[in-house]
Image 1 (cartoon, rainbow, N blue to C red):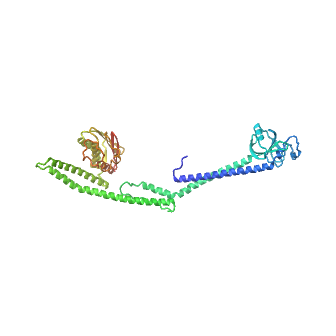
Image 2 (cartoon, rainbow, N blue to C red):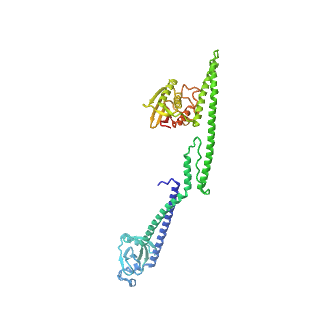
Length: 487
């Protein structure tokens, strides 16, 4: 039997089990005590009866005084209980045996004893002590053996059947009464436990509602509080501690949200302010490279590096500004976008940028259209293809597939490169996440800012979609899912 899982069921089951054990203990004690009491009364009656009845069973009537009042001459049944057994033994042989058949003075009935019965009776010590024995034709008897005047042994017995019947009746009554008591106590106990645990149930319900709140990011609505209860009770203390914990959690979440907002505002402001000086640095570098006079090779190399890093910094500033806008929840365009056309254009650009890779397409026959921002979706494709090109060796195969499943467009970018390192996979869509080693021969010191995949995730989420990664050595797949219905 499996033990219940809920506290209410456990308390109810425990109450019923304890009551059942108590009832069983009371019933066993009552049965044992009653059996002992009735057996003691039977033994007392047997001692009071003595050996008068078996002494009168000798055939031939050599003791006439013992037969007074016996009309049949079979034994003295005066003051003998119905069922009284008497036997006379000479040595190991039973010479006479009978049992009182009915009321006093009406006679006895001879008893036929088997060899086993004779052996049991002959084995009884003639010491006047009462013992229990079994007679095959009569059942259980309490018997007493005493020495006769003629050297014989006189055995007197009283049946155990009345005692057993009384004890069995008590067992039946106890089983019925205790069974009914257990049923009533089980129902009443379940109702009582249910009523007593109502405050705890309310705390559990509140905890369930709190667990359903989105606490990972953004502004969090105030969490519901558990109903107040008696602070002197265990449930009341739990409710109070739970409400205090919720207060601390709300304060921490509020501070976290304020910190995130300040960081986003700083990133947006800094990105916006950096765009002008970065563009100015890049422009001056380009202007210096256009100088008509002779310029030392080292200076030219330095200017080229300044221009390249300024361009890279400009891209990073643009990415940070985009992420800040997406974090702020600014809406994107919601126009019909031919995702199939975007895939074709992005793959064409990728082939031009990575001629050393094999690019394959798997497109559905019908165009796949989604509502969204065409420019941002093209950026998602460009980032995923650039990621595959930069992090796989030359000669790798990159497969781009696009299909429609129910109301969802499914875009997959698969490559047969070495895969994403296990320690990087859990945070691959976080900002500024980079692999410890480059997987591409073309990747230089400035290839990638660690923002590409975070932009992919942010844009997909802004389109009510998501992006996932499945990677192992020899197989890496990024899957983007976007709803095709109106958002």
